[in-house]
Image (cartoon, rainbow, N blue to C red; front, side, top):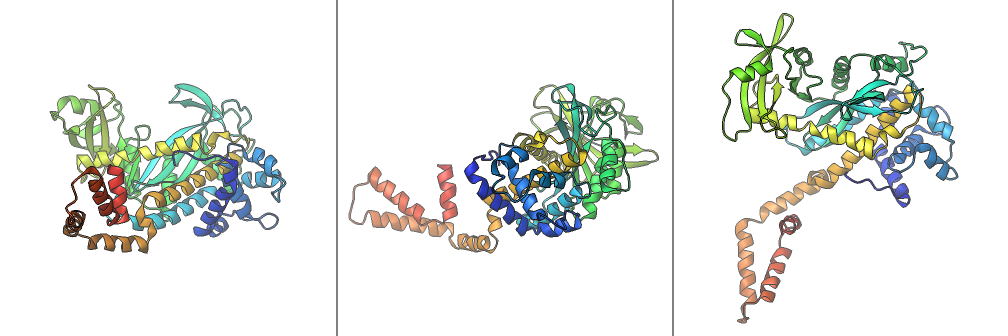
Length: 452
């Protein structure tokens, strides 16, 4: 997934792969319940597969259309109308697709594995656009400056190996560059635009509730310090989820500890730290207070690798987790950073030049679907369990060849090589090793070659 080929001669192969994905996960059923249907004209499947295929090219959909318009049976206005159709529920489409992919992935892992939701946001930049609907001046924390665009708020799911985009929203701001003329809150398009103008923390809970209602489940929600607060921990527990987050080291955020409300810095300075090369410096149990209710939270202070004398604070509402498990779980959050990079650098996320919010939203949904296709293909390439019954047959074959039998094969080869009293030399040793490797299972041979 690190490199996406962009050669024109592979366009037909890419298109056929997308069509196979469409049929495999029965996206026509998802499209129907998401109102992504056409009563006349070009079928939705044709337009959908074409738009996804353009994500893997080095051209926009319009430029790609100009190059292949003689081969296509529709005009550029046709797929633009699909993108600008405010009646299509792209959020529901993405959630239902994610659920079907999870059904494919879950049997590949142990039931005891902890699946997680991951929440994060990134800058969707439209710096030169002055007429983009709902675009606003946003502060880009990576570049440390204000720019026009949206906050790309993403909810993802991960089992530790595969990341899947579950749901998202493109958030506006107070300083809007181009405000919409009117919003009809009764329509699906209007509801999306109203959601775009709400607080990010509230939208996170809406995305989580939508995913849970559609059957996408996980035990934990991972998020960074921008979303962490005692109130957020309470709201997650109300949804039946545990939070694992980086905590703000602010003197304005308090936790109940030793009978008083204390910030995380004071707790660290007043407690005895662990010495040596342990993975964490301090672990304490506190209470996250919100109004008259409180939730138990475990704080884990860890070393900051970038600053020798600094520390970071992780928090979880699942106090049964050990400190090492908290650190390991939070490490899974990095996969969403890879997702953002893939979308921006390879899948043309911010390259769409449409002005309507519905069109930008639809294009973002298609980018997420394109990433899901790559995630499935990558999992099938690296995980032998995707072979299904063939994998288990291979496992049975491996268990039949014991270590003692392998040694016996090696001894027999030596006897056969020296039965005529050949002189031990490098050529003979190489012959023995080659014959021994050939008698090993193919998977063993691959591992030995990698080790060499």
